Image 1 (cartoon, rainbow, N blue to C red):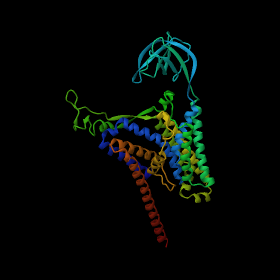
Image 2: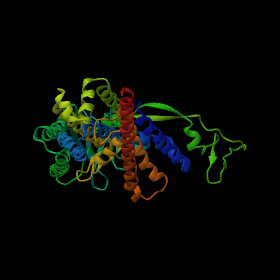
Image 3: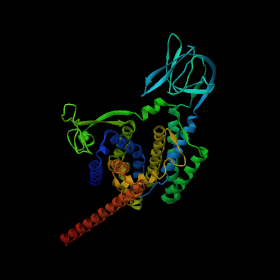
Image 4: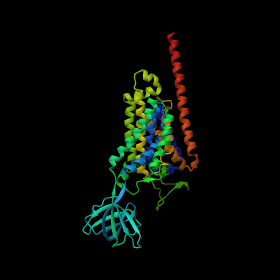
Length: 458
C-alpha cells in the first residue's frame, strides 16, 4: 500500500474515532452499515474519475450520465400493467404477518389464473371505490388462488369483483447491458473529442454535463420516473445483504459509551438490570455488507490489477506524467486516454442503475447533481494528483469512505447542513495542498541527489 493510501486510511480512522468520541451512536451498527452503503454507491464514480485524473484530464459529466442512465433504464424497461380481461370474485379475506406488517391475504374464486409477483388486482370496495393491490406472493389451494397484497390498510371486501392486470416489462438482462453500452459510448465520444479533435477535457465534459441532463429531462418529460412497487425481487437482491462481517469493540462505543458495560451517557453511569448488576455489552458487532459493496470490491480489484499488474497501467502512468514523451516512446496514448473516459462513463451508468434500485426513483433534474465534485474530491483525497501520473485504487476507495463519513459526521455532530460544502472544500483543499507539498519535497530530494551525484563524480 502506498504512503498516500496509508495516510487516507489513518484520516478515515481519525474521523470515525473523533466523531465516535463526541457522539458514540455514530459508530452504531446501522450507521456503520450506512457508511459502507454510501461508500459503495459513490465508489464506482470515484474509481472512474480517478482513471481520467491519472491521465491529467477530468470528467465533469458523470452526474448527468447517472441521471440519463437512470431515465433510459426506466424507459427501456417499459413497465406496464396490462388488463388480462379476466374477472372473478373474492371468496375470503384474512390478515397475515409479513414484512413487519399485517398484509391482506385474499382468496380468489379461480384456479386458472397464472398470477405472478408484481401483478395487480383491482377491486371495488364496500364504499363503491376502486382499490388496487400489488401482489407480493401467490399460492394455490383447494379453494382457489390465494394472494398476499402489499397494501396493509386497503379494504378488500368478500364477494367483490376482481379484475386481473398482468405486470409486463422488457427483460432486465437486456435493459441493463443496453444502458451500460450507451454509457460507454458517451465516454467514447468524450475521449474522441479530447484526443482526435484536440478539445480540452474540461470543455467537452462540461458540455456533456449540461446536455445529458437536458436530454434526461426531455425524455422524462420533466417528471420523476420510478419503479414503484414493482421488481421487488430484483430490488431486494441488489439492495440486500451479501454477508455479515464481525467488527470488534463497536458495541463498547455505541452501547457502552466507551465502556465495557451498558452505559447511560446522559447520567454518566452504568445501566443496571433488575438485580442491580451491570450489563456487559457484546465484544463484536456483526455488520451487514450490502451487495453493492461486494460489487465495488470486484470492480476495484479488477482496476487495481489493470493499474498495477498490466502494461495498461504502466502506459497510463507514463502518459499522465508526460504525454509527449509517452507518444515518442511508442505508447498509443490516444487509446489509453479514450479507454479511461469509456470506463468512467460506464461506471457512471452503473451507478445510475444502482441508484434507481436503491432510491426506487429518478429525478432527472436533481439525481446525480454535483456528484462529479464528490468523485473528484474522493479521488484527490485518495491520492490522485490532478496533474496526472499518480494514483491509487485502494486510496480512492478509502477516499470515498472519508467523504461519506464526513457527511454523516456533520449530521451526527448536529453541525448545520449549510456547512456541508464548506467542510468538503476544506478537505479537498487540504488534499491538494498535501499533494503539492509532497511534490515539492520530492523534487528537492531529486535535486539534492543529483547534486550529490555530480559532486562525487567530479
